Length: 219
Image (tube, rainbow, N blue to C red):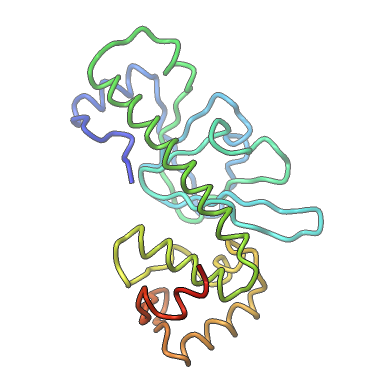
């Protein structure tokens, strides 16, 4: 995953943030960030922490749209945050760099570190499009089992490992997959009993092989 400051030295990073008139703000755990989400000109970069973008429909059902952690970016230019159905919540104390993104494209700055920053942002936007496409594919799976397996597959590929560390609790996982929490728990229990996964806390170990019938059937 691309870091917004890849190939930019700490000294040049400081110059860049000063040039962009960036602010650094700390949000406390469980505090909302709606105002930032609704501001079309704000681009946020998480220094350290954890933010959720959530959607609540007219029936009160909650879906986790996106999980944002260290070095990830957010803003209305990336997600549909202006709708009243969406909100941003800091799930832990979170430090964020705030930039008026109009300065990125109205500037005549030609420094190497500035151009590198623009390249990094564009690459991140491309990665986010790929993530959204993965999410669409995930949510189109018809069964709870297949949604779980697809999520495990995505995470396994992302970290190139059979060991998956959930970035959130199981209630949030159900919201992320848009499935019932109790039904998901039963399916995880079945997968564990059938020897396909091992669960310890938030760590999930994949015990099946890519060429197994289980993997082939959910594709």
